[in-house]
Image (cartoon, rainbow, N blue to C red; front, side):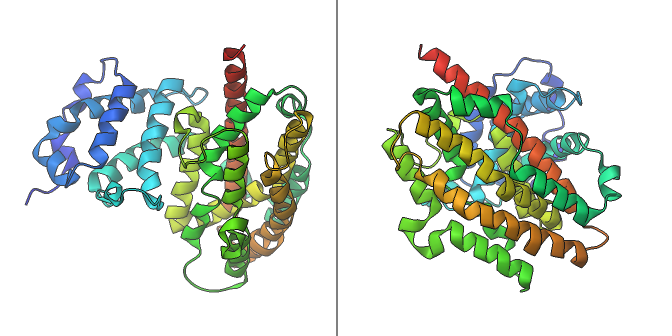
Length: 365
């Protein structure tokens, strides 16, 4: 039996890293690898199978996080699309089950770790961790929660409310569908285990997101109906190629935090922000839809979310985050870290979505 030893089989790959890689071709090669029978054995026995992909990966990693103030577009798009394709194996898509034949591949784990390690170090360097560690945590969480309930009307929010066209709205919904059609699925990954009031609250949130087990009330069902009303394809991942890498980064970040239980506090801090700020964003979308004279079906998802997330945000703050400060007094600062990271990454993703929407509008003029 051949043992997977990446440090032996790929030690010469970086010698070609000076060449300009074609990231699109490299991604297509990677997609084929995902369903290659017995991937670890094949890659170990015949390293040439992945040589071109490895050269592209090495080049992207060398460039992507070299500058604290810069995130190169091509390299980050490539890395986060690769990382997403690995992470998505944690979900059941009700498609060909052969897609999962390599879900426990050591080679895929190695790729994931090589991307996540420098990327997460870059993300962490964007925040003053020492200041977060010294904060009055409960007060800081409450102040952030109050401020993010009604954030100021920024230029991007004003654009959504007052200027976005129907084509822009459709493009926005298409991008949002990558996450909207799998509603809170990552939350499932942290619910198993010991029972307490925090866990019970999280289950209540999940049950409401999932329509209490009724498919016709599930939030993703409303999202699919909204897409159909707008003439969009409601299949999951139908618009993956439209999604900016900054959005994929937020998704990948949450995969990481939920798949590693050590990051539980960071995830729940981030989820608290997500639930608190959600209604203010959805109100922008409703304002746009109303201005465009769209039907109730074309915007009903947002109304449902505003109603429920206003409640969920308070649950997350008062019944999850604040109690966890008492449960983990030495590590609870990670709640604040997770909150601030989610806000920073969401703002970055939101700006990228607006840019993509404007480009889509201009291309149709």
